[in-house]
Amino acid sequence: MAGIEDNRDPLDAIFRRLIANYGPITLMHYMGESNARYYSGKDPLGSAGDFITAPEISQMFGELIGLWLADMWIRAGRSDKVHYVELGPGRGTLARDALRAMKKYGLEPKVHFVESSAALKDIQLAAVPQAQWHHDMSTLPARGPLLIVGNEFLDALPIRQLVKTAQGWRERMVGLDADERFIPVAGDKPMDAAIPEARREAEDGTLIETCPGAASVTYEISGRLLAQGGAALLIDYGYDEPRTGSTLQALREHKMVDPFAMPGEADLTAHVDFAAMANVVQARGVRHLGTVTQGHWLRALGIEARAQSLARVAPQHAEAIQSAMHRLVAEDQMGSLFKVMGIGAPEWPLGAGF
Ligand code: SAH
Image 1 (tube, rainbow, N blue to C red):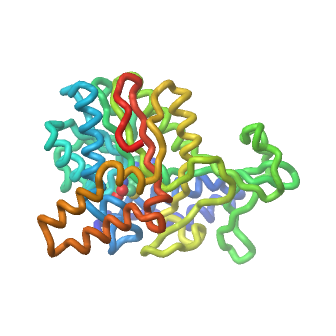
Image 2: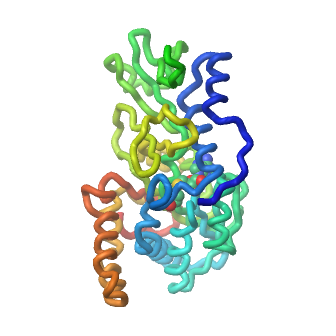
């Protein structure tokens, strides 16, 4: 596990001080700071870490993404100024697998990683030495089509929760209980204006989540595709119809833990609202190619044939390859909870698998 010297106060102490001096903080503040701290100093991925992601389960995941991008690029006319952009590339595994697959089709894009974690940047550098790093999307090149990928990136962005109380809608905040434990509490400012009119009438206790960060990333991606051409794939666990209730969860050492127990020590995520993102895409005038389940998309791209051909080359791994595929596509595994959203520039082709 990579680590960097961390001389900062524990986040727990910082939050306690803030709450003692100024009252409860917003959940968005709590989640944003917790994840920034969580990702900044360690590699949380893999069996020795806190959670595992699709590219770490099998090379087939990144390869099929590379294949999809290459197919789009070929049908769009093989621009030679093309850039591969990955948001939150983790260990660089997906990029490495996708770039290898793209190369087979003559696609060798410049590589750009949008990453905020210093510890993960070191690991990404070893996996994809030719990449250029960006703190956010604003410094990405302004010329040439972009092939954008984000896997389990949006779910790490801080959410806002709004809860209906007898006094109207309130923001969910984080305060301290009598035993000095962090707990969610309703804020005292009226928040009715933040709720779409159609959803304002609701029973007390109803909870609605929004993710301003996911909306603004989607807005930025859409604007770039409109101006520069290209396509994007955003993959995450989430839902494609409006829903209510909290989806905030915390993972530590592959187990669910209380999101309020150890700020900065567990991975905090929330399900992604793909319907809200599709609205942003359409409002911006680019193509929503579709949002489908990961199982559907990987099957449509030919994961079964890919698994068979890998097993033919390495029969001793046949069982492991089958079980990795099962994890990625089965309904009771990652197959239906995870969704794949495709976005395309207006003049680009419609993507395979949607
Ligand atoms: N895509 C990888 C890693 C997923 S974990 C995989 O599938 O394995 C989330 C990734 O997003 C990490 O690389 C994390 O450091 C990065 N990240 C989280 N919040 C970010 C932010 N606000 N800006 C940039 N990167 C962020």
